[in-house]
Image 1 (cartoon, rainbow over the protein chains, first blue to last red):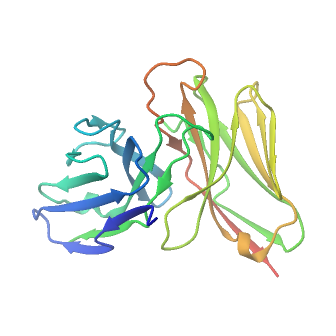
Image 2: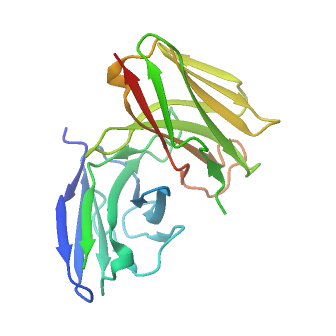
Length: 115
Length: 118
């Protein structure tokens, strides 16, 4: 099992460019999440999905869009990148129920720099 | 509004001694708490958790204590080892017992950098 994988690992964008971050999980998890990590801020939830074809906003959704066309994939899009979106992005997935409750499995992260 | 706070950005401990990492929360709806460990250039990994009906949970060298009245939890690592050096995040969730639609969403603290010296 690869667990949760993220593509790409690193990316540098210019302001205004667009890109898509791909997250894939092979654990048949229902729930998937996108977080960003900034210094001194911990991890903040951007968007999440509770199943194929569903998405919902998290704490900091502005400037991002997501799609979950297949259960195993969760895509995060930046339509017009801004320097404020420079961050490390983590994808996570979890079972809808189970023990320990809400244990989320994280990918290795994507480091994005917007110039 | 930071609902989960880790007020110590860093902690330095000698190998073999106890490490105590602290976390405070403000949302009384939180009923499940988790600790994650993160090494550089890796994603966070689950360490230990505790539900609100318990005040202690132990797993090997790791023990989490929950004080609901104070809205405070702590992670104890005994004995500390150099391999424990990492960033530790406290996280909280609501809806385990109340049902509802939290969908497993986690609210994270800012993290504490633990350094264990040989």
